Image (tube, rainbow, N blue to C red; front, top):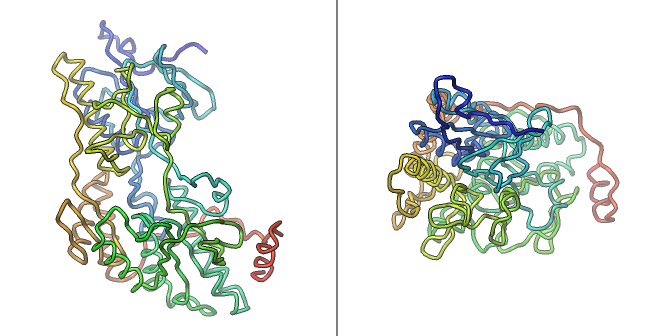
Amino acid sequence: MPPTNIGRADLFLDVSEHIPVVVIVGGGFGGLAAAKALKNAPVEVVLIDRTNHHLFQPLLYQVATSELTPGQIGSPIRAIVGKQRNTTVILGEVIGIDKEERYVLVSDADRASVQLHYDYLILATGATHSYFGHEEFRKHAPGLKSLADAVAVRNKILSAFEVAEAEEDPRLHRDLLTFVLVGAGPTGVEMASAIAVLIRNSLRSEFRRIDPASARIVLIDQSPRVLGSFSEELSSAARKRLEDLGVEVLTGRAVEKVDAAGVIAGGERIVTNTVIWTAGVAPSPAAKWLNAESDRAGRVRVQQDLRVAGHPEILVVGDTVTFEENGKPLPGVAQVAMQQGRYAGRLIASRIAGKPAPGPFRYFDKGNMAVVGKGFAVLQSHQFRLSGFLAWLAWAGVHLQFLAQSNLRVSVFIQWVWTYLTGQRGSRLIVNHHGFEPAHTAEDPEVGQVLSRLG
């Protein structure tokens, strides 16, 4: 197929000179920040993403626990950059890159492959779940990286209560209402506490055969404490809050097995139908596309200005890149991606304008936050540490500020206030559901025995 040049200057009849084309792969925090940084530059920006929406990932767990709807944390990319006349949005998935010919290979909605040529390329392709070499866990332990993931997890959580309500043998209710989360970082802590609040505030009076409050929520991590990136003081405060909410926190235990009957951690089997993976991420295959140097996790190694060695026209940002400051790699959080995206956009704009390039990229750490249930959060910014209600207010304000559109800020704020006051949630719907599958006989005798007991 001949190369396809979308967004090139020859599409505009009143322009005779070639306008540089900047292709941005990924419409997440890093990609959008780069596109916005180029809005006034004399370039044609082509933003490619395999979905048509930008996702505010820090609030995915609230969709999974029914507090927010998918539409409250997702914004159409075209709506966000619609006023940028130099920006074209392409719905497609990048499946390869030719560095020498300078084009990306894109598979579109019809599964046809097209070549999009670039003068500059910014890779902001994000990350996906990492099962640390145990891909067999994936089938039984869904992660939380997309709206589809969040809705699937929401279905799984809500369905557990429906199945238990229909089960006439009360001896089985405990196992049916056991929820295991693997990974006690911010996502795991926020998810576990949100499930606990959902059960306490929203479901407690709606069932007749079961007591939702009897549900068991187990948070497991092989690290010695929860929220390992926070200070020990805040980690301890978060753990106490989790335990006050009824969450069992099992630290220092590695998960050895995840199967149809539950998990085995520290030699102990926990029987459950609901396992949620909140541990670890893996980068996109960008390093393989580029045949570039990478770290052990597969993140691209770059120079101090985020450019790929030997290819100054290619920059990599966000979870796709490994970047060290003061001897430590930067964390895979939204603030890093946004700051790197803005830097990449400014660097390209300065080069095109013939101006001095900005100095090496430097990350400004604004601190870390994690919410632990209703009205409680932990906040750490350098030596400043805070936990409790004030930290929760700060968390809420920051998250509202970074939602992509003003209408979402209003909608989420109203929903949060309403849920806080009444316990009523935004969406407790089980969707895309066609009945419950019967338990299959497992090859593992232990699994088969457990499934037989669960019926």
